[in-house]
Image (cartoon, rainbow, N blue to C red; front, side):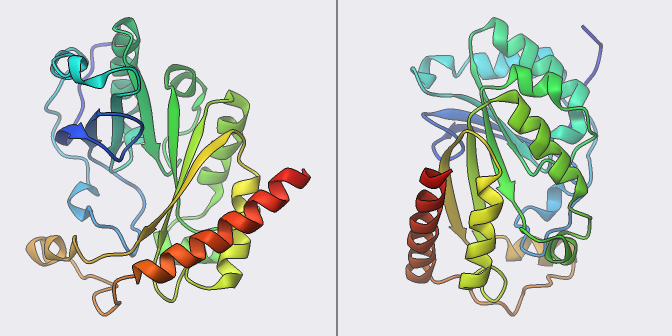
Length: 244
């Protein structure tokens, strides 16, 4: 194995929302996107390496008795695909231990995703925006790399969970929901779709880091409206999916 190390911001030992079952969630630092609604700005820049693959996997294995049949480890961030060598070595070690691996990603890494997709068991794909212009305004980057990742994801045949943050005045219109239906339909093997209402929980981080918060005047997303949009989405999605 390659000698490498990685930069980890934090490790959640009893995660219940980032994949099935009870999971250890590993947050890797570094991200090329600058999403307007980001609630983890402290992870934008890659920090100093602080774990070898062996050290991290040893720590994860301690939690294995809690995983049961469905649980495992989820790599999140930041964008874990930016630390690809470290991620690959961790996944190879975890596979030897029979531990289920989920990857929470926006698909904006360094390219050539086949090897990592062969190793992981589940992809949690974070949809940023469905249209190229809106994607650029929301994240600061072009949509191209995300589109390339989707192509490789479809070839891999791995199961996918979709996540979409719903921000007032950005994703809460029926026009956007219609575009999201079309967008998700091009992704194969989707097993679950989640809408996450925009919240203010990360606002204090912007103040602490002295970073301008572009959505500081945006209200939190109303949960009831978010639920209604989800129902409308699923209704259209299921109808069109069944017709394909």
